[in-house]
Length: 64
Image (cartoon, rainbow, N blue to C red; front, side, top):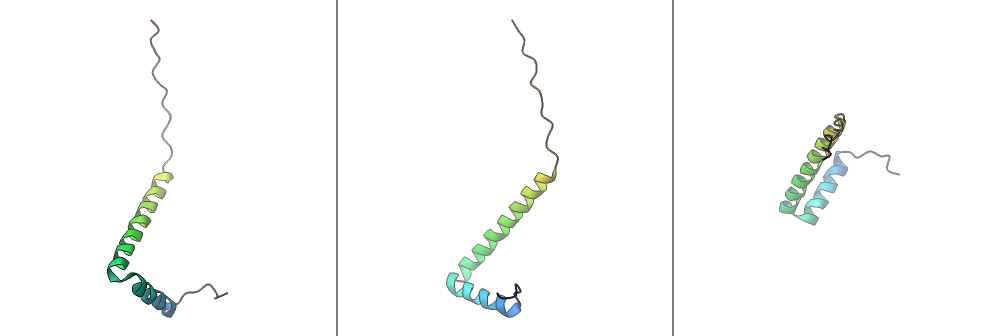
């Protein structure tokens, strides 16, 4: 529909609309929250790359 490309003018228009809609303080909080979410997502992806831990068998129970 739009060619799938967002250039600098389109991004500036989106930023101005977001600034008007949310205000400068909320926009900063939203950016910080988005950064934290991306950081947590990347950390979760790195944790998933490690091989799973070997399952341990419980010690044998003493029968008395």
